[in-house]
Image (cartoon, rainbow, N blue to C red):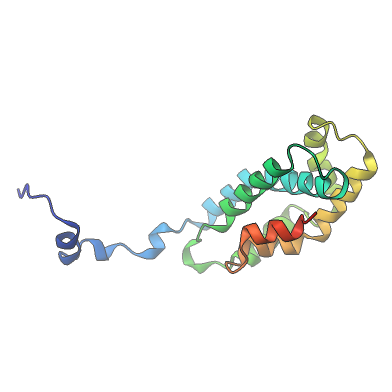
Length: 162
């Protein structure tokens, strides 16, 4: 047994390191779906809370906090590669629009009810308007997650500009 500790250069020269494929950092389609299930409700809640602040309460003390949480939700889904080069945009459309009806105002309204109650946002017209905004912007949200050239911070700054 060889007890010699190899330097990085020696290790790569032995061709051990080169056998690691880039795709090893990707996750399976099933794992990505599970990840989406873990983040999709928070994505809706934080996006809608940010939109609420932009439209109705620009000085809300949690506005920046919700933008940070939204950034984390988007990046958790954006910065993951899917094995076998699955088209992330098509997958997100299938999951968020076809499977979960996130383009439906009523679905979004049902999702935000509990969070808006917790945050003491009780006006029904506000909840309907924010739900409508999310449903109308689902394509932009999907693009922000799926398209690498869209920088998350720029998307959030543009979408929730005051």
